[in-house]
Structure formats: C-alpha cells, structure tokens
Amino acid sequence: MNIPEFLHYVSLRLLMNKALQKALLPFGHDLNPDRWIFILGCYNSATTLLASILRRHPLVGGLPNEGAFLTDALPYPELFGWPRMWSQCLDKVRLENGLGGMSRAKRIKRQWSLWFPNRVPNLIEKSISNITRTHFLQEYFDPAYFIYIVRNGYVVSKGIQKKANYDRWNCPYKANGYPIELCAEQWKVSDEILEKDSNKLKRILYVQYEDLTNNTIETLKKITDFLGISPIPGEILEHEWSIHEMKSEIVNMNPAGLKRLNKEDFERIESVAGNVLKKYGYTPDI
Image (cartoon, rainbow, N blue to C red):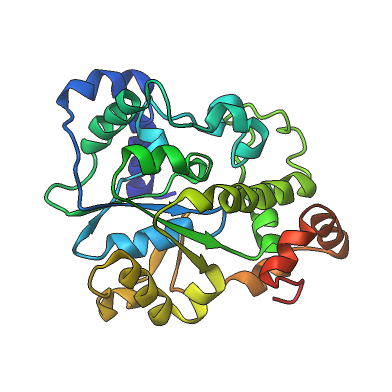
C-alpha cells in the first residue's frame, strides 16, 4: 500500500467513528435531491463499479464510502461480527417503516450531507445492507430509484469467502473463514428478499453484471433512461477503475473467478442456491 492509499484508508476509518459522526451532526443540513439513487446487490456483484461509473456523471454525486458507515443511524453487519454477511444478522440490520422512521432518516441525511458534493441534483448511495430496507428508503428518501445488479452466484460466493475481513470484525469464523455454503446462502437470500420486497417499490431496475461488462454502453443507456438523465459521456467509459484496491478497465471478471472454484465448490454452492442460479441462467461455465 503506497502513501496516498494509506492516507485514504486512514481517512475512511476515521469517518466511520461513531463519536465523530455524533459530534459533526450539528454541522449537517437537510438533503432534498431530485433523485435518491440506491444501488442494490449482493457483495462482490459490482455495486461499487456501477456506483463509481454513475458518480462520474456530471449530474450525480456520491459518498466516499458506503453510507451505512458514515452515519450512526444505520446498522451494518460488521458491527455484529459478520463481515460481508448480513444474512446472519438480518433482524439487526433490516429497517421497516414506523415509529421513529422520519427522525432516523433526517439524522442519516444530515450526517451524509457532510460528505455528499454540493449543488449536485442527484445523489447515489450503495450500502450493501440497503437491500434489506428498501421500504424504509422509499418512504423517507423520496423520490427513491433502485437499481439492482446481480452477478453469477458461483463467482460471488467465492468472492465473499475470499474477501471477508474476518480478523478485524471478530467474526465467529475468523479461524477458518466462511464455508462456501454460507456465502452461497448470502447470495441467494439477497435475491429472495429483493424479490419479495420489490412488489411495493415504485421505481426499480434490474441489471446483470454480465450485461454491464459485456454490453456496457447499452446497459448504461438503459440505466440513465430509467433515471431520466442524459447518457454518460463516452470518454468516461475509457477510464481505469479502482475497485477494492484493484485497477482495471470495465471487463467481465467471471471467467477468472470461475477458475478459482473446484468441483466440490460448485456442488456445495448449487446445493444451497441452485434455484436462484437457474433463475438467472448461471452455470459453472457462464
């Protein structure tokens, strides 16, 4: 890690400090953008890539980290010892509409306002655990636009297993890491919850990672049409993207990801998430 990357890492950790967030609350202000854009998806499904691309649009602004880390009013699974695994603490991270919802949302907005760019009409946010609280977001972040991106469940499951920071969050599985079945369950439950809750969402668009990476221009045009904003300038797509400390152009990383799995991995993933894999046409070859 070089010096700029180290300083960026330190600054992000500082922004996550709950005492600092509480102390800075009086300096925040209300946010009333033209659109709230929420990127939904499972871990390792390119939510960061998609949000990064859309943030390059001149009419869209985003946060320096996941919004759940920048407020003391949103729970996230790492707080309960579950990095990249909210399915194991769903009851603690899910929010429903009801008593106290408006005041919670106001606190979130004021804390986020400190980090969103000024004078940008559309604000984008991509906390992974937001998929558990879409009804809350639609009620108190109006107008809310949801973009759900799904990626090959085999690759996602392996990615969760590999990238979870077990030590930092004192995870119950820190000795040996998550079993691949648990990671497959996280991918499956993400889709099942979104499918169940989506019938009450006014504005939601479904996108597949494979379309975003293989047919980038067409897929992004579909997204900007859904949002009702101008297309993303072509020169932006030639940018090299830095995602989770890796720099790359927009390419489909599934083939490389599939090579990291063995026959037993495939079988164990299928035993848990076979029905959702079939739903999207994902196979060990795609």
